[in-house]
Image (tube, rainbow, N blue to C red; front, top):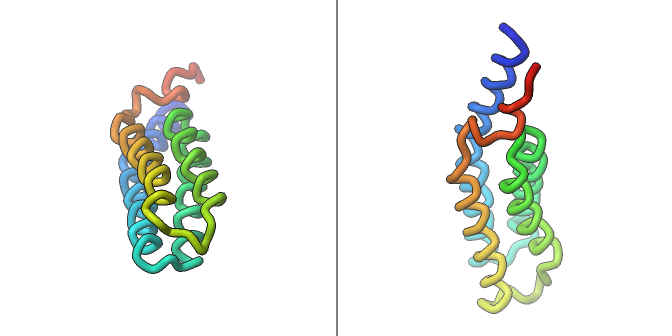
Length: 116
């Protein structure tokens, strides 16, 4: 298999699996809003961070940037304040990530345009 074909396979796989990663962030946040647990915060940050790295590496900078903004907001979230006022900006960032991820397709990857 050529390097170009292998890269195309990786890009396609990422496009297929990113919805699961975004759902994992969303699920962790749902737990966070109901429990306020430190583990839910950690899980949300870890999933967002994974999206930052994988999407950035595979050629989707807008998805990576949306996940990075969410990760940053989660890291700044005070553990003792899960009021709706604190939730709203994070929920908005999650929605932005969902929109960015939903618009992904293999041909939109910056790596798909590389000549190998």
